[in-house]
Length: 364
Ligand SMILES: [Zn+2]
Image 1: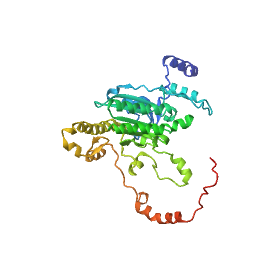
Image 2: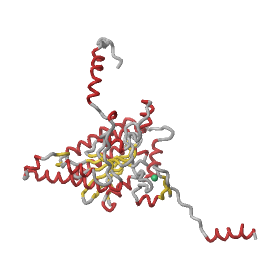
Image 3: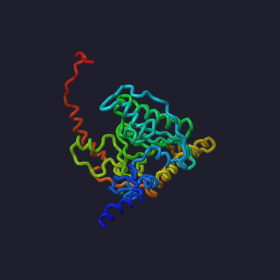
Image 4: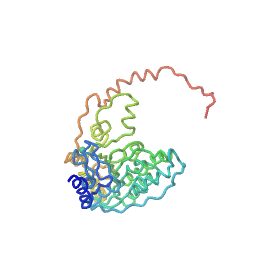
């Protein structure tokens, strides 16, 4: 009877049951503890792993969907920019890399702009997509951020940015670095218009993006565990040849050291943003009535809106918002210690130096 058991039965079974293989990307591995979760459940959980609360990276489209009421928004068109003006080529052509990234993400470039309503409050939101060439800041991304900010100024609404970037886009050289001052000027326009600019720093926000618009917000919120830095920990460790403290340059560490304002769980993020906007924009309404109400002008203002400091502080201490932790004495910035080092430096500068010869011909 072996023949029936070994050959016939499996044959019949394979005819009756159609085995379905899970599609690619069905399972996602948790970056915190390594457990597997299925994509669909994760998407419903806003890409927060249920095992340990690890916040996975999100696409720009998902970002916009969770922030706007009912997931409804209209995309703001970004003016086209020159493609590959440097005719750059490393291992592959830059134009080929761009083509691949566009096909993979269905985006025009790393930044997606949407406008819509957040708890009834009209807003313009920019989301950076790490999947698109590591969310790098090139001409198109810079143009998108500026377009979004100008749109907010035009509509007199707040601007929210979800930052996620590996830094400047190498393939565009100096043209990508030029986006840093350009976006900074756009932030200034928002400020002059008295409109709130809130930055949500997600994992990872690094390089030229941290060095420009991502650190110029009125309020900086970070997601738990997000890496936020200019140069990464590996580069720093190799340069100074010292062991870095645990959690170095992560959201919680930066909160404890006063670099950011809040660390907010993704499930509380939309609510926190709505509350902040409500506070900031209620001041704008009050400022409009300032002519009739003299007491308004006597209050403190932040970014054109009157702000109650106590209210902001209370807000930062509710729910899943992480509390700042005390910094160890040795780690704390101490002005007295800096003062103590000064005399030595002054003595050094007083020592005779070789004066540059004015008559010597210049090389440039
Ligand atoms: Zn986990």
